[in-house]
Length: 469
Image 1 (cartoon, rainbow, N blue to C red):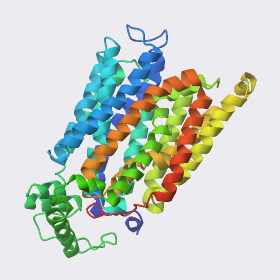
Image 2 (cartoon, rainbow, N blue to C red):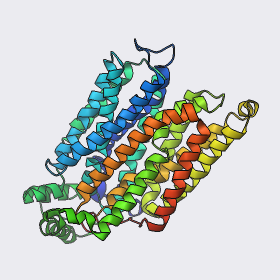
Image 3 (cartoon, rainbow, N blue to C red):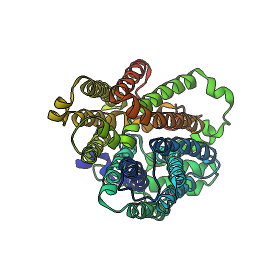
Image 4 (cartoon, rainbow, N blue to C red):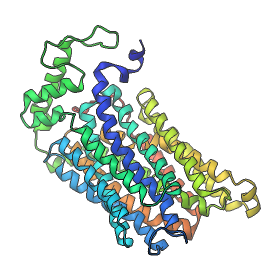
């Protein structure tokens, strides 16, 4: 009875879970790189810097924002290779720019090395959020898709937390060595998984496609398929075979076999999907949910709190993990909309509360209630993690129409990357020049406007087929 309630424990989903966990090694590695930047930019600007050259606030803003240029480049690169190369080969390629990120940070000689490293970190991010959702959506059953894809954000959050901690505990040059090992492990383990059935069908490799389909559905190959009579196995071998035949028909005769034309992007349903996706992208980035992770230590340093900013950053990192865990557990139970709107409502309250506390209290009150900035940021980060951050990429993939999903996803991620550059470039200016109140009020106002739009127009996509609109 346990596996009936928890479908992830069933035989049908075993290989799907394993391949998702393997991909999440890269999610963790990428999170480590993101989290590492937050305390590191504080450390390299201090008198105790491990580097042989000084780093200015202006250069810090470029270190942060060049991630956006890399993200854009990764979106374009992997958007071009998504359907020209196999899904699996694209998944291998994700490891290369991430390895370059750590290599450049290890051998750093001047600030240009840091610029280039952040650029390659952005390339990795672009690939992770273009290729990986396509790969996973093609092998995961719809009843576990939300959970396993949202789990990626939980692993990313764990990586962010470790990235927050390591620079304050170990030598600067040790973290890149740890970070470099992770993509190597990922590539080695990924060798044991087959290509997606959809990719093989598009290449005309029907026998391999069926074998891959059976592999990801937990069916033994080479023998007459006899499914277990255990309670958790609810479908017969005939029904499983009909699933493959239906998929084969869709791929060969449906949208996947029809060339995508420019007019397909201007159909009413496509324009509606683009509008919803772009507003969701604006909410995701301009609400500050991603920028907070990159500049968390700096936020606490300028908030007026007397608490140790590195300790506060670690607490927020733990909170982010808890939030993404909630997303993983509840996304397939309550749906995408419920988590998103409860999340953004609490985020808005937390950001306006944080800004008001900093603006309307004096130094004495800030010292007496030094825990308040941490409490507000914990509320903002936890709620953004379980609703917006944890489910963003799942929702984007599910919103976009099947026929244009691959190019449309790349276009959407290019838009996100431009927003990433803008927010990471402007955030140091807002924090250090305009202050916490202006920063939080601006993010909160943008969140209000975009949330109202999405509440009216965003559809629920829980359980949506990935092959049919």
